[in-house]
Amino acid sequence: MPIYIKAKITTPRIIIYICINKFYNVMKNIIGLLFLLVSFFSLISCNKDNDEELIEEKQYEFSSIMWALQEGDGEDLFEIKTPEQVFRNTGNTTKEIVINSSENVEESSQFFIDENILPYLPEEEITIAFPDVFELLSSEYKYFIGGRKAPFKNEKTHLPPDRTITETISLAPSCELRNSSTFTMKKIKATYRIRFVEKEGIDSYEKEGKWEGVFIVFESSQTVINEIK
Image (cartoon, rainbow, N blue to C red; front, side, top):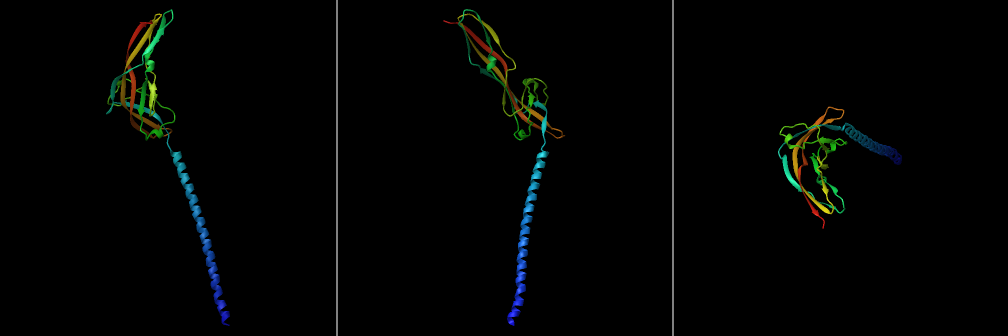
């Protein structure tokens, strides 16, 4: 008789234990599933935000540029000598010799651009009219329209001379011509203020920077003709 009573008391406890264990496993699976869902929607939200940032990235285009003389700006003169040119006439008739010393001289333009704005510059190349006449510059910002132009980029751009200096000499037979030239150059340093405007928008921004240009002022040459012995 006591054995029967003991069996009746133990059976409900076993059933309750099994139910609790099943409930725990179900809840654990539900929590795991919820964690995966939260992670998934968080990833989608981040990607959406990144896409919106890319869509909202603004594009700008060149509007205008002004020039002035600020601290550190000015004009310096210096000289360069080109390699000696030698021409020989070994024939029996007079020979016309064309001397162009300026073809060995390069003028240049260089913009010094703030690295912070380089990523926002338009993809298409911008060409800027620069002040190659120092006397036109002053402490007040001014526009320069027309004239020579150079690309707006953060490196030196070599330019062909604005003026070609040539000389034609008749060289007699059995003679030799030697020509040497010295060029007086000017280096101009100035400050620019460039303005960009948003494409299809109203936003704009301005930046200042330095510019440096090197140009020919004049040439002095010496020509010597000797008989070939």
